[in-house]
Image (tube, rainbow, N blue to C red; front, side, top):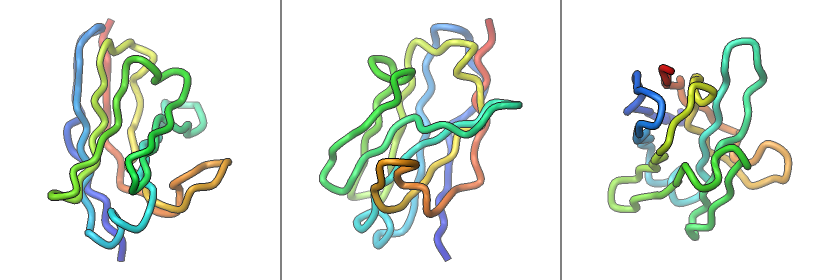
Length: 120
């Protein structure tokens, strides 16, 4: 059973920062691309960022310049550092893992998700 354990969400004011963490097993961490998706109420899930096992990253346009995805091999953990947060970043954020594919990369496995709320 694949487990993706998210932490670090919460409430922050506009312009603030949060760091999300996602820990998993070594086999998942080393073998698959890791990612973050988000879903706001009434909207579809959307890709935020991905990072593969070579450290190559990919970002949604909405995340570029404000969010940074990174990985720590010693801890089998992926991070999403979110800066300059906006109310429109409020959503349920999901840690994911999977193979790379052009459409919905790293989407084979999903964590339970964690809430991020940005107040105006």
